[in-house]
Image (cartoon, rainbow, N blue to C red; front, side, top):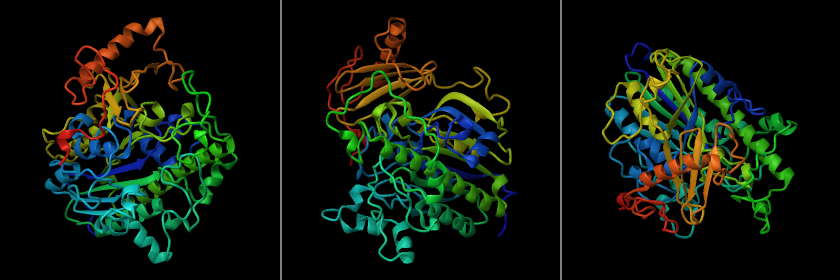
Length: 497
């Protein structure tokens, strides 16, 4: 096959994982997790140490990636399935328009599930989604058996196999067990196998955009045994627990396998943490497998690579689990860019501390491709922050001063603002406020909301949040103060059909 190495425009490889914490990289100093391939991408690329998901669950996070927009504009400010995705301008659509061969392998999490969203083709595995496994009311054309590509592939090899065979729910962040089939049949391996096959089938006359989108380390926590063995005897640090966290679990919520909070039995929690870390190392090795294949096809040095996650996993921090909440384990994500052919002039090995968000992926990749950036895009291209000429220089690139994050979720609905050094949190239903000095308290152990030395900063951030929420249909502010108790919405009215 003809190599596109002589092409003027680079290939684009976007690698996303689902529910990976920002700190689960060896190169970021994690004491347990082994991530050799991601470490190498960061060592020879640029790692952004203050990257966030402004709406940290799957659906709204992916809306930010697809559209390059803030949650206020793309309209998904919480998690709600079965709301149509009718965005006119999308990342794959713009790259296809610019002459790229575009392909997604793995998770999309859009609706309808088979929407192409601008891709030429999608090989789909969204993982287990409750709404499309519903056997009693969902239309057959929307059922998982009709829309997914992984399970039919698996059943050709293991007749009768299903996603629920292990007995683990897709939100079970506190329980784990090893994968029960040959490793090559694991969804992580399948994603890479299908992505390598795309390298064989792609149009050789065009640069390609491949979104390799993994479901793991999102639960179920089911790593192959060889990876679980890496962590079975490791001294796994206990999760941090802040002075503001609930210390009792009167309702025994921690005994539920799908809990979002509570005191989980120690042995069960340790096993879950080991399995979560094992899934990340498994992912890392499979990413390495794909990079080897990319090299074999002669395309590695002609490919710009971005790696990130849609959100994190609290994993017991403050006796909390899963995602959606404004704390670092949930909202802070890994973010690495790499350019093996040095087309973009990156400052190799740089750790950039500017505040980046998932909405920045679309303009960055369009700029790398030499494609126009639509006026609908609100994110900013990151290449100036990462370049050898400007990267790391204070004030060299005009950049955002703060980020507004949020998530509608009943009584836990929250809004937060941060510059990566401080964070102010407001729970919109109760009016509870929190403030963390992230530079001196990176684990959010102390809620400083009543500490006298911080009152000026707290007032500042409260006023910033008031400005961010002005004009919102929920009525969270009158322009002067925050108003608690207003009904939250997961989807804003302007995108509903």
